[in-house]
Amino acid sequence: MQNIFNAENNLDDSIFKKNFMKISVLYNVLFKIVVYDQRNLFEKEKILYSLEKENTHFLKKIVADEIYCLYLKDCISKINLTYQIDLHKQEKKYMLLNSEYDELYNKFIEEKKENLLLNETYDKIIFNQKSEINKLKSHISIQNKDKEILTKYIDNYITYIEDSYQKYCILNKEYKNLEEMHHDLEEKNKSLIILVNRMEDKYPIENNNNNNINELHMDHIKLMKNSVYY
Image (cartoon, rainbow, N blue to C red; front, side, top):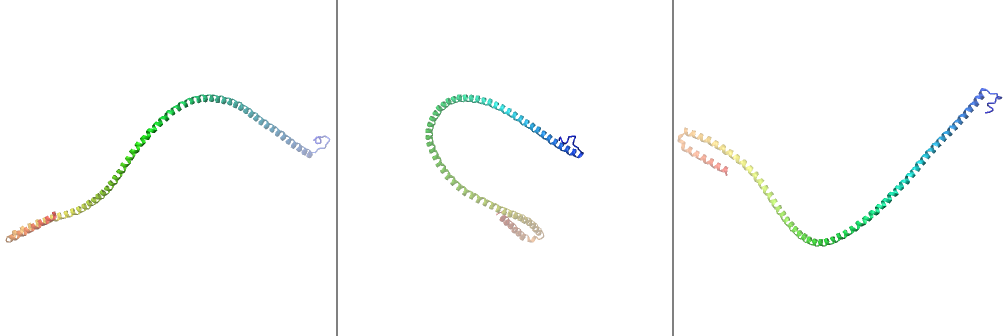
């Protein structure tokens, strides 16, 4: 660089420009190095600050944990004292319960003896009830058989009634037809009698014969009427 700026050197523009470019490049490099170091230093200071902050927080946490541990020790001592008092009370309760248990056990033994006697009595009652139930079952089976027989009889009787009703319907229809025939015959007989009476008026000599004919007609109608009703 001293050679570049020496007055004795004959510098032309091209050499000056080359050296100037070199100087500018070196300057930029140095500037970048200095800036990088400054940034690196800033980052390191930032990391150091965060570490100091975390360390302070950690110390505070340790102090808080120590205080909490002291609090827990106090609570444990109080709980231990309470437990001792409760244990003493529980021992008294246990003694009372033990005495009550002995009384209850004695009662249980007595009730057990009474229950044995009751069981014997109940066994006898159950045996008698079973025998009665068996008798009742046999009676019910007999009744079921009778019921089946009666059901068959009723079914047969219902069938007989249905058949009889059908026959009645047929006979009733036939009876109505016969009544219509009878009515028709009566009408014809009336017409016939009127005709015969007219003929008697015209032919008086044959009166006796006509009377006989009318009597025959009347007898015939009576026979038909009787056959219809029976």
